[in-house]
Amino acid sequence: MVAGYEDRPMIVVRYEGEERQFMPEEISSMVLAKMRETTEVYLGKTVKNAVTTVPVYFNNSQRQATIDAGAIAGLNVMRIINEPTAAALAYGLENMPVTNKGRIVLVFDLGGGTFDVSLLNIDPGIKIDKGLFEVATAGDTHLGGADFDNEMVKHSIREFIRKHGSMDIQSDQKALRRLSTACERAKRMLSSTTQTTIEVDSLHKGIDLCITITRSRFEELNKDLFGKCIKAVDKCLQDAKMDKSIVDDVVLVGGSTRIPKVQKMLREFFSRKELRRSINPDEAVAYGATIHASILSGGTDDTRLVDMLLRDVTPLSLGIEIGYDHGMSFVVPRNTAIPMKKVKEHYTTLCDNQTGASIVVYEGENASTKENNLLGEFVLSGILLAPKGVPCIDVIFDIDANGVLEVSAKDRDTGRKNNITITNRSGRLKKEEIERMALEAEMHRIKQIKLAEAVQED
Image (cartoon, rainbow, N blue to C red; front, side):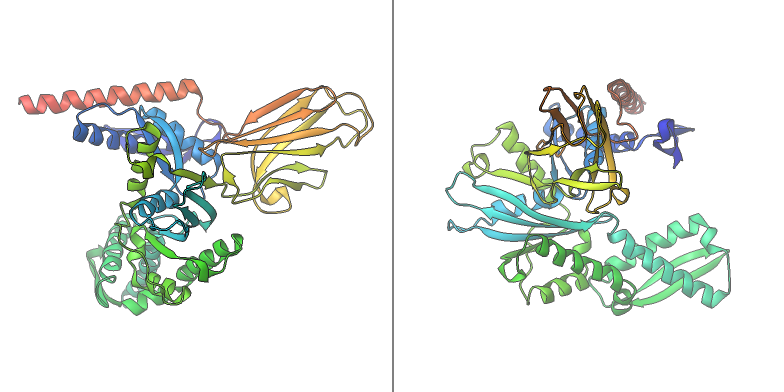
Protein backbone atom coordinates (compact mmCIF):
# COMPACT_ATOMS: atom_id res chain seq x y z
CA MET A 1 0.00 0.00 0.00
CA VAL A 2 1.44 3.37 -1.05
CA ALA A 3 0.19 6.96 -1.31
CA GLY A 4 -0.82 7.96 -4.83
CA TYR A 5 -2.16 11.08 -6.51
CA GLU A 6 -3.86 13.42 -4.00
CA ASP A 7 -2.76 11.00 -1.25
CA ARG A 8 -5.19 8.34 -2.46
CA PRO A 9 -4.33 4.85 -1.24
CA MET A 10 -2.84 2.69 -4.00
CA ILE A 11 -2.32 -1.08 -3.92
CA VAL A 12 0.93 -2.30 -5.48
CA VAL A 13 0.79 -5.72 -7.16
CA ARG A 14 2.58 -7.79 -9.80
CA TYR A 15 0.15 -7.76 -12.72
CA GLU A 16 0.83 -9.44 -16.08
CA GLY A 17 4.55 -9.56 -15.38
CA GLU A 18 5.02 -5.97 -14.25
CA GLU A 19 4.52 -3.90 -11.11
CA ARG A 20 1.26 -1.97 -11.21
CA GLN A 21 -0.61 0.34 -8.85
CA PHE A 22 -4.36 0.02 -8.51
CA MET A 23 -6.90 2.04 -6.61
CA PRO A 24 -9.15 0.13 -4.18
CA GLU A 25 -12.11 0.78 -6.50
CA GLU A 26 -10.25 -0.97 -9.32
CA ILE A 27 -9.51 -4.03 -7.17
CA SER A 28 -13.15 -4.17 -6.12
CA SER A 29 -14.25 -3.79 -9.73
CA MET A 30 -12.17 -6.84 -10.71
CA VAL A 31 -14.14 -8.94 -8.22
CA LEU A 32 -17.43 -7.53 -9.50
CA ALA A 33 -16.37 -8.08 -13.12
CA LYS A 34 -15.58 -11.74 -12.39
CA MET A 35 -18.97 -12.17 -10.72
CA ARG A 36 -20.62 -10.52 -13.70
CA GLU A 37 -18.85 -12.88 -16.14
CA THR A 38 -19.85 -15.93 -14.08
CA THR A 39 -23.46 -14.77 -14.01
CA GLU A 40 -23.52 -14.10 -17.77
CA VAL A 41 -22.19 -17.58 -18.50
CA TYR A 42 -24.85 -19.13 -16.27
CA LEU A 43 -27.74 -17.03 -17.64
CA GLY A 44 -26.57 -16.88 -21.25
CA LYS A 45 -27.32 -13.16 -21.46
CA THR A 46 -25.63 -9.81 -20.79
CA VAL A 47 -25.89 -8.39 -17.25
CA LYS A 48 -25.86 -4.62 -16.83
CA ASN A 49 -27.66 -3.91 -13.54
CA ALA A 50 -26.82 -4.99 -9.99
CA VAL A 51 -27.83 -4.59 -6.39
CA THR A 52 -24.72 -4.36 -4.21
CA THR A 53 -24.50 -5.01 -0.49
CA VAL A 54 -22.13 -3.31 1.95
CA PRO A 55 -21.35 -3.65 5.67
CA VAL A 56 -23.82 -1.65 7.72
CA TYR A 57 -21.07 0.64 9.04
CA PHE A 58 -19.84 1.70 5.59
CA ASN A 59 -19.81 5.50 5.57
CA ASN A 60 -20.85 7.76 2.73
CA SER A 61 -17.50 7.79 0.95
CA GLN A 62 -17.21 4.00 1.10
CA ARG A 63 -20.67 3.65 -0.43
CA GLN A 64 -19.72 6.10 -3.18
CA ALA A 65 -16.57 4.08 -3.87
CA THR A 66 -18.70 0.92 -4.17
CA ILE A 67 -20.86 2.63 -6.82
CA ASP A 68 -17.69 3.66 -8.68
CA ALA A 69 -16.34 0.10 -8.56
CA GLY A 70 -19.56 -1.13 -10.12
CA ALA A 71 -19.29 1.45 -12.91
CA ILE A 72 -15.71 0.39 -13.67
CA ALA A 73 -16.94 -3.22 -13.91
CA GLY A 74 -19.57 -2.13 -16.42
CA LEU A 75 -22.46 -2.39 -13.97
CA ASN A 76 -25.20 0.05 -13.12
CA VAL A 77 -25.57 -0.17 -9.33
CA MET A 78 -29.34 0.11 -8.93
CA ARG A 79 -29.26 0.12 -5.15
CA ILE A 80 -26.85 -0.33 -2.25
CA ILE A 81 -28.31 -2.11 0.78
CA ASN A 82 -26.82 -3.09 4.10
CA GLU A 83 -25.72 -6.72 4.36
CA PRO A 84 -27.74 -7.56 7.51
CA THR A 85 -30.82 -6.04 5.90
CA ALA A 86 -30.33 -8.20 2.81
CA ALA A 87 -29.94 -11.29 4.99
CA ALA A 88 -33.07 -10.43 6.96
CA LEU A 89 -34.97 -9.93 3.71
CA ALA A 90 -33.97 -13.43 2.63
CA TYR A 91 -34.97 -14.83 6.01
CA GLY A 92 -38.13 -12.73 6.36
CA LEU A 93 -39.76 -13.88 3.15
CA GLU A 94 -39.16 -17.54 3.92
CA ASN A 95 -40.42 -17.23 7.49
CA MET A 96 -43.17 -14.61 7.20
CA PRO A 97 -45.65 -15.20 10.02
CA VAL A 98 -49.19 -15.95 8.92
CA THR A 99 -50.74 -13.33 11.23
CA ASN A 100 -50.70 -9.56 10.78
CA LYS A 101 -48.49 -9.16 13.83
CA GLY A 102 -44.96 -8.00 13.02
CA ARG A 103 -41.80 -9.65 14.27
CA ILE A 104 -38.66 -8.08 15.72
CA VAL A 105 -35.61 -9.78 14.21
CA LEU A 106 -32.00 -9.32 15.27
CA VAL A 107 -29.50 -10.13 12.54
CA PHE A 108 -26.07 -11.09 13.87
CA ASP A 109 -23.62 -10.84 10.95
CA LEU A 110 -20.07 -11.95 11.78
CA GLY A 111 -18.02 -12.47 8.65
CA GLY A 112 -14.36 -12.65 7.79
CA GLY A 113 -13.50 -9.00 8.31
CA THR A 114 -16.50 -7.05 9.57
CA PHE A 115 -19.17 -7.44 12.24
CA ASP A 116 -22.66 -5.98 12.03
CA VAL A 117 -25.74 -6.23 14.22
CA SER A 118 -29.09 -5.01 12.94
CA LEU A 119 -32.46 -4.91 14.61
CA LEU A 120 -35.33 -5.06 12.14
CA ASN A 121 -39.09 -5.02 12.15
CA ILE A 122 -40.64 -7.42 9.65
CA ASP A 123 -44.22 -6.24 9.18
CA PRO A 124 -46.37 -8.65 7.15
CA GLY A 125 -49.60 -6.76 7.78
CA ILE A 126 -52.00 -5.22 5.34
CA LYS A 127 -50.99 -1.66 6.21
CA ILE A 128 -49.41 0.63 3.63
CA ASP A 129 -46.04 0.42 5.38
CA LYS A 130 -45.85 -3.34 4.95
CA GLY A 131 -42.25 -4.43 4.66
CA LEU A 132 -38.90 -4.73 6.35
CA PHE A 133 -37.66 -1.74 8.35
CA GLU A 134 -34.27 -1.34 9.95
CA VAL A 135 -34.67 -0.06 13.49
CA ALA A 136 -31.08 0.15 14.76
CA THR A 137 -27.57 -0.96 13.90
CA ALA A 138 -24.26 -1.48 15.65
CA GLY A 139 -21.03 -3.27 14.93
CA ASP A 140 -17.31 -3.06 14.25
CA THR A 141 -15.71 -2.54 10.84
CA HIS A 142 -12.53 -4.25 12.05
CA LEU A 143 -13.80 -7.42 13.71
CA GLY A 144 -14.26 -10.77 12.03
CA GLY A 145 -12.91 -14.23 11.41
CA ALA A 146 -9.49 -12.92 10.44
CA ASP A 147 -9.09 -11.44 13.93
CA PHE A 148 -9.73 -14.85 15.51
CA ASP A 149 -7.09 -16.27 13.16
CA ASN A 150 -4.62 -13.57 14.18
CA GLU A 151 -4.97 -14.46 17.87
CA MET A 152 -4.14 -18.07 17.02
CA VAL A 153 -1.16 -16.92 14.94
CA LYS A 154 0.17 -14.91 17.91
CA HIS A 155 -0.29 -17.91 20.19
CA SER A 156 1.52 -20.19 17.73
CA ILE A 157 4.45 -17.78 17.41
CA ARG A 158 4.77 -17.59 21.19
CA GLU A 159 4.82 -21.38 21.40
CA PHE A 160 7.34 -21.64 18.54
CA ILE A 161 9.70 -19.15 20.19
CA ARG A 162 9.27 -20.83 23.59
CA LYS A 163 10.32 -24.18 22.15
CA HIS A 164 13.07 -23.04 19.81
CA GLY A 165 14.37 -19.82 21.36
CA SER A 166 14.22 -16.24 20.18
CA MET A 167 14.03 -16.19 16.39
CA ASP A 168 13.16 -13.66 13.71
CA ILE A 169 10.08 -15.53 12.53
CA GLN A 170 7.92 -12.42 12.81
CA SER A 171 9.86 -10.86 9.92
CA ASP A 172 9.39 -13.95 7.72
CA GLN A 173 6.29 -12.95 5.75
CA LYS A 174 6.05 -16.22 3.85
CA ALA A 175 6.12 -18.20 7.09
CA LEU A 176 3.43 -15.94 8.60
CA ARG A 177 1.16 -16.44 5.60
CA ARG A 178 1.51 -20.22 5.81
CA LEU A 179 0.91 -20.11 9.56
CA SER A 180 -2.18 -17.94 9.11
CA THR A 181 -3.63 -20.47 6.64
CA ALA A 182 -2.98 -23.31 9.09
CA CYS A 183 -4.61 -21.36 11.93
CA GLU A 184 -7.69 -20.65 9.87
CA ARG A 185 -7.95 -24.36 9.06
CA ALA A 186 -7.64 -25.23 12.75
CA LYS A 187 -10.30 -22.65 13.67
CA ARG A 188 -12.73 -24.29 11.26
CA MET A 189 -11.97 -27.71 12.70
CA LEU A 190 -12.68 -26.48 16.23
CA SER A 191 -16.25 -25.72 15.21
CA SER A 192 -16.89 -29.45 14.87
CA THR A 193 -14.33 -30.98 17.25
CA THR A 194 -12.97 -30.07 20.68
CA GLN A 195 -9.28 -30.46 19.81
CA THR A 196 -7.07 -30.19 16.75
CA THR A 197 -3.50 -29.42 15.70
CA ILE A 198 -1.80 -26.53 13.96
CA GLU A 199 0.81 -28.06 11.69
CA VAL A 200 3.19 -26.37 9.28
CA ASP A 201 6.14 -28.29 7.79
CA SER A 202 9.43 -26.38 7.73
CA LEU A 203 7.77 -23.21 9.00
CA HIS A 204 10.98 -21.27 9.63
CA LYS A 205 14.63 -22.17 9.02
CA GLY A 206 13.66 -25.77 8.40
CA ILE A 207 11.89 -26.20 11.75
CA ASP A 208 8.43 -27.77 11.75
CA LEU A 209 5.54 -26.43 13.81
CA CYS A 210 3.09 -28.80 15.48
CA ILE A 211 0.84 -27.44 18.23
CA THR A 212 -2.20 -29.00 19.82
CA ILE A 213 -4.98 -26.55 20.54
CA THR A 214 -8.31 -27.15 22.24
CA ARG A 215 -11.60 -25.39 21.70
CA SER A 216 -11.45 -23.99 25.23
CA ARG A 217 -7.97 -22.59 24.59
CA PHE A 218 -9.19 -20.99 21.36
CA GLU A 219 -12.08 -19.40 23.27
CA GLU A 220 -9.72 -18.10 25.95
CA LEU A 221 -7.43 -16.53 23.33
CA ASN A 222 -10.38 -14.69 21.78
CA LYS A 223 -12.45 -13.87 24.86
CA ASP A 224 -12.02 -10.11 24.41
CA LEU A 225 -13.21 -10.31 20.80
CA PHE A 226 -16.20 -12.44 21.75
CA GLY A 227 -17.00 -9.90 24.46
CA LYS A 228 -17.07 -7.11 21.84
CA CYS A 229 -19.70 -9.07 19.91
CA ILE A 230 -22.11 -9.20 22.83
CA LYS A 231 -21.47 -5.54 23.70
CA ALA A 232 -22.49 -4.57 20.17
CA VAL A 233 -25.73 -6.57 20.49
CA ASP A 234 -26.50 -4.80 23.75
CA LYS A 235 -25.72 -1.38 22.22
CA CYS A 236 -28.01 -2.09 19.27
CA LEU A 237 -30.88 -2.88 21.63
CA GLN A 238 -30.16 0.22 23.74
CA ASP A 239 -30.15 2.46 20.64
CA ALA A 240 -33.53 1.05 19.65
CA LYS A 241 -34.78 1.44 23.24
CA MET A 242 -35.88 -2.18 23.22
CA ASP A 243 -35.53 -4.95 25.76
CA LYS A 244 -34.01 -8.21 24.58
CA SER A 245 -37.13 -10.06 25.67
CA ILE A 246 -39.17 -8.62 22.78
CA VAL A 247 -36.81 -9.98 20.11
CA ASP A 248 -38.69 -12.74 18.29
CA ASP A 249 -35.86 -14.18 16.20
CA VAL A 250 -32.07 -14.11 16.18
CA VAL A 251 -30.69 -14.77 12.70
CA LEU A 252 -27.08 -15.87 12.19
CA VAL A 253 -25.24 -14.59 9.11
CA GLY A 254 -21.57 -14.92 8.11
CA GLY A 255 -19.21 -17.87 8.31
CA SER A 256 -17.85 -16.94 11.75
CA THR A 257 -21.28 -17.53 13.31
CA ARG A 258 -20.49 -21.24 13.01
CA ILE A 259 -18.12 -20.86 15.99
CA PRO A 260 -19.78 -22.69 18.92
CA LYS A 261 -18.76 -20.00 21.45
CA VAL A 262 -20.56 -17.33 19.44
CA GLN A 263 -23.75 -19.38 19.36
CA LYS A 264 -23.49 -20.22 23.06
CA MET A 265 -23.09 -16.55 24.06
CA LEU A 266 -26.08 -15.50 21.99
CA ARG A 267 -28.29 -18.25 23.42
CA GLU A 268 -27.31 -17.22 26.95
CA PHE A 269 -27.82 -13.52 26.23
CA PHE A 270 -31.30 -14.15 24.83
CA SER A 271 -32.31 -16.52 27.65
CA ARG A 272 -31.85 -19.78 25.75
CA LYS A 273 -33.74 -18.57 22.68
CA GLU A 274 -33.26 -20.91 19.73
CA LEU A 275 -31.11 -19.30 17.03
CA ARG A 276 -32.29 -19.22 13.43
CA ARG A 277 -29.82 -21.09 11.22
CA SER A 278 -32.11 -22.31 8.45
CA ILE A 279 -30.36 -20.28 5.75
CA ASN A 280 -26.75 -20.79 4.69
CA PRO A 281 -24.85 -18.04 6.55
CA ASP A 282 -22.47 -17.62 3.60
CA GLU A 283 -25.24 -17.16 1.03
CA ALA A 284 -27.97 -15.30 2.89
CA VAL A 285 -26.74 -11.81 1.96
CA ALA A 286 -26.49 -12.63 -1.75
CA TYR A 287 -29.92 -14.25 -1.65
CA GLY A 288 -31.46 -11.15 -0.09
CA ALA A 289 -29.77 -8.87 -2.63
CA THR A 290 -31.16 -11.04 -5.43
CA ILE A 291 -34.66 -10.73 -3.99
CA HIS A 292 -34.33 -6.94 -3.84
CA ALA A 293 -33.00 -6.82 -7.41
CA SER A 294 -36.10 -8.74 -8.46
CA ILE A 295 -38.29 -6.14 -6.75
CA LEU A 296 -36.51 -3.22 -8.41
CA SER A 297 -36.56 -4.76 -11.90
CA GLY A 298 -40.21 -5.78 -11.68
CA GLY A 299 -39.24 -9.33 -12.57
CA THR A 300 -41.67 -11.09 -10.26
CA ASP A 301 -45.39 -11.65 -9.83
CA ASP A 302 -44.96 -12.73 -6.20
CA THR A 303 -47.11 -10.26 -4.27
CA ARG A 304 -44.90 -10.74 -1.19
CA LEU A 305 -42.05 -9.18 -3.19
CA VAL A 306 -43.98 -6.54 -5.10
CA ASP A 307 -45.42 -5.07 -1.91
CA MET A 308 -42.25 -5.34 0.16
CA LEU A 309 -40.62 -2.11 1.25
CA LEU A 310 -37.02 -1.99 2.39
CA ARG A 311 -35.55 0.82 4.46
CA ASP A 312 -32.03 1.08 5.81
CA VAL A 313 -30.80 3.54 8.43
CA THR A 314 -27.89 5.93 8.78
CA PRO A 315 -25.03 4.15 10.61
CA LEU A 316 -23.61 7.40 12.07
CA SER A 317 -25.02 10.77 13.11
CA LEU A 318 -24.62 13.63 10.63
CA GLY A 319 -24.23 17.34 11.31
CA ILE A 320 -22.29 20.54 10.77
CA GLU A 321 -19.62 22.44 12.69
CA ILE A 322 -20.74 25.53 14.59
CA GLY A 323 -18.89 28.19 16.59
CA TYR A 324 -15.19 28.69 17.09
CA ASP A 325 -14.86 25.77 19.50
CA HIS A 326 -15.47 23.05 16.88
CA GLY A 327 -18.91 22.15 18.23
CA MET A 328 -20.98 19.54 16.41
CA SER A 329 -24.58 20.50 15.63
CA PHE A 330 -26.39 17.21 14.97
CA VAL A 331 -28.93 17.31 12.15
CA VAL A 332 -29.54 13.61 11.43
CA PRO A 333 -29.27 11.22 14.41
CA ARG A 334 -27.74 7.78 13.84
CA ASN A 335 -30.23 5.03 13.00
CA THR A 336 -32.49 7.43 11.08
CA ALA A 337 -34.43 5.58 8.37
CA ILE A 338 -33.47 6.41 4.78
CA PRO A 339 -34.28 7.75 2.26
CA MET A 340 -34.93 10.93 4.22
CA LYS A 341 -34.85 14.72 4.05
CA LYS A 342 -34.46 16.99 7.07
CA VAL A 343 -34.33 20.76 7.39
CA LYS A 344 -32.67 22.40 10.38
CA GLU A 345 -33.43 26.08 10.73
CA HIS A 346 -32.05 29.22 12.33
CA TYR A 347 -28.31 28.89 11.80
CA THR A 348 -26.68 32.31 11.68
CA THR A 349 -23.42 34.27 11.34
CA LEU A 350 -20.62 34.65 13.90
CA CYS A 351 -19.34 38.09 12.84
CA ASP A 352 -20.82 41.49 11.98
CA ASN A 353 -21.27 42.12 8.23
CA GLN A 354 -20.38 38.53 7.37
CA THR A 355 -21.17 37.92 3.68
CA GLY A 356 -20.36 34.20 3.50
CA ALA A 357 -20.78 31.13 5.70
CA SER A 358 -18.78 27.91 5.54
CA ILE A 359 -20.95 24.80 5.89
CA VAL A 360 -18.64 22.03 7.13
CA VAL A 361 -20.27 18.59 7.25
CA TYR A 362 -19.22 15.79 9.62
CA GLU A 363 -20.33 12.29 10.62
CA GLY A 364 -19.81 10.85 14.09
CA GLU A 365 -21.15 10.80 17.62
CA ASN A 366 -18.73 13.16 19.43
CA ALA A 367 -19.81 16.63 20.56
CA SER A 368 -16.54 17.98 19.11
CA THR A 369 -15.96 17.82 15.36
CA LYS A 370 -12.26 17.18 16.06
CA GLU A 371 -13.23 13.60 16.98
CA ASN A 372 -15.60 13.08 14.05
CA ASN A 373 -15.08 12.36 10.35
CA LEU A 374 -15.04 15.32 7.94
CA LEU A 375 -17.23 14.60 4.90
CA GLY A 376 -17.02 17.85 2.97
CA GLU A 377 -17.63 21.59 3.00
CA PHE A 378 -18.98 24.42 0.88
CA VAL A 379 -19.56 28.17 1.18
CA LEU A 380 -22.89 29.96 1.11
CA SER A 381 -22.10 33.43 -0.21
CA GLY A 382 -24.12 36.58 -0.86
CA ILE A 383 -25.38 37.07 2.69
CA LEU A 384 -26.63 40.64 3.25
CA LEU A 385 -24.60 42.91 5.51
CA ALA A 386 -26.03 42.67 9.02
CA PRO A 387 -24.96 42.38 12.67
CA LYS A 388 -23.89 38.91 13.76
CA GLY A 389 -26.76 36.62 14.69
CA VAL A 390 -29.28 38.42 12.45
CA PRO A 391 -29.12 36.42 9.16
CA CYS A 392 -31.15 33.20 9.14
CA ILE A 393 -29.75 30.18 7.33
CA ASP A 394 -31.52 26.86 6.82
CA VAL A 395 -29.49 23.68 6.27
CA ILE A 396 -31.04 20.69 4.47
CA PHE A 397 -29.75 17.12 4.63
CA ASP A 398 -31.10 14.85 1.87
CA ILE A 399 -30.13 11.15 1.80
CA ASP A 400 -31.23 8.88 -1.05
CA ALA A 401 -32.01 5.16 -0.89
CA ASN A 402 -28.32 4.31 -1.46
CA GLY A 403 -27.28 6.35 1.57
CA VAL A 404 -25.64 9.04 -0.59
CA LEU A 405 -25.90 12.44 1.09
CA GLU A 406 -26.56 15.88 -0.37
CA VAL A 407 -26.32 18.92 1.93
CA SER A 408 -27.65 22.32 0.95
CA ALA A 409 -27.97 25.71 2.65
CA LYS A 410 -30.34 28.62 2.00
CA ASP A 411 -30.23 32.23 3.18
CA ARG A 412 -33.83 33.18 4.00
CA ASP A 413 -33.31 36.89 3.34
CA THR A 414 -31.79 36.64 -0.15
CA GLY A 415 -32.96 33.19 -1.21
CA ARG A 416 -29.37 32.35 -2.16
CA LYS A 417 -28.59 28.62 -2.13
CA ASN A 418 -25.59 26.35 -2.39
CA ASN A 419 -25.12 22.62 -1.97
CA ILE A 420 -22.71 19.73 -2.08
CA THR A 421 -23.11 16.03 -2.79
CA ILE A 422 -20.90 14.50 -0.13
CA THR A 423 -18.09 12.38 -1.52
CA ASN A 424 -14.77 11.16 -0.21
CA ARG A 425 -12.92 14.24 1.05
CA SER A 426 -9.66 13.08 -0.55
CA GLY A 427 -11.42 12.97 -3.92
CA ARG A 428 -13.92 10.56 -5.38
CA LEU A 429 -13.00 9.22 -8.78
CA LYS A 430 -13.76 11.68 -11.54
CA LYS A 431 -16.09 10.66 -14.35
CA GLU A 432 -13.16 10.59 -16.76
CA GLU A 433 -11.20 8.30 -14.44
CA ILE A 434 -14.12 5.89 -14.13
CA GLU A 435 -14.55 5.82 -17.91
CA ARG A 436 -10.81 5.20 -18.41
CA MET A 437 -10.74 2.38 -15.86
CA ALA A 438 -13.90 0.84 -17.33
CA LEU A 439 -12.31 0.89 -20.81
CA GLU A 440 -9.12 -0.71 -19.48
CA ALA A 441 -11.15 -3.40 -17.72
CA GLU A 442 -13.11 -4.15 -20.90
CA MET A 443 -9.92 -4.32 -22.98
CA HIS A 444 -8.44 -6.74 -20.44
CA ARG A 445 -11.60 -8.87 -20.60
CA ILE A 446 -11.43 -9.04 -24.40
CA LYS A 447 -7.73 -9.91 -24.21
CA GLN A 448 -8.45 -12.78 -21.80
CA ILE A 449 -11.19 -14.11 -24.10
CA LYS A 450 -8.82 -14.09 -27.09
CA LEU A 451 -6.13 -15.87 -25.07
CA ALA A 452 -8.63 -18.53 -24.00
CA GLU A 453 -9.77 -19.01 -27.61
CA ALA A 454 -6.15 -19.33 -28.77
CA VAL A 455 -5.49 -22.01 -26.15
CA GLN A 456 -8.58 -23.97 -27.27
CA GLU A 457 -7.46 -23.84 -30.93
CA ASP A 458 -4.07 -25.27 -29.96
